[in-house]
Length: 191
Image (cartoon, rainbow, N blue to C red; front, side, top):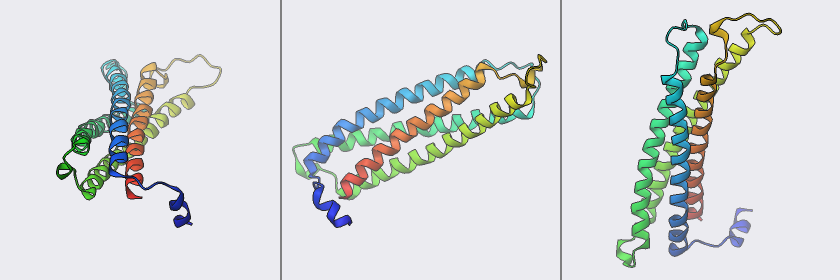
């Protein structure tokens, strides 16, 4: 079945791959950068706007764990954005008219695989951060009695908690774009 499918798909030439790589690389970079910037801003707002006087409870410490995973996810995204500079160098070499400067297929595959692995690690971290944050927000909402106006500060869902959720969901999107870019280029190059 795979041979039948491959007979309909065009085999990528070096020039077609270089053109696609040249177009996809900056789009992926700017989408990841913008989603990472929104995530960073939302996490910074959540971190610096936390009320120090609120008693530390289990849900607040779980929320802190979500913030920690989010920060690690942003750091992984920063490395991924740095790694896209490697893509830019490969792009320049592929666009070069001198065929002796073109990178080998194995080198391109290795760079794309490293980018994919970094994005998948970041995706896992962002997913864990989102899950932990949602569990904290859900536990706060379940701790509030329905229909009773009892104010307990440790159980109030604050808008800052939702900023952490927003940051982690945007991180998932950024790492997903990076994964899709690397995986798509690897798949197309492997044909």
